[in-house]
Image (cartoon, rainbow, N blue to C red):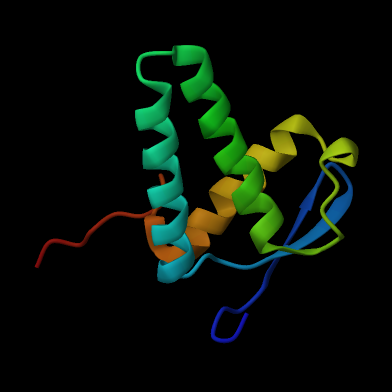
Length: 101
């Protein structure tokens, strides 16, 4: 993806290269999520599935290497990579703090 520099991480002895998510991609994901949650109404199981599907989608979208195969990747690795993608895109995390001027 033009403008998004790839990052590298080693998880459980497996190398991964991923990129951040851009604003357009993020808005499309959020719109899809919001529509699905509205359709799910109060069904918490459906809402949990929607959230898991989003994590898997983000990982698949932004994983550069190796080829994404949901059947051959650790369950926690998918979540971890999605978190890293969002962190890379500027969504912050536990290590990010604003500096008061």
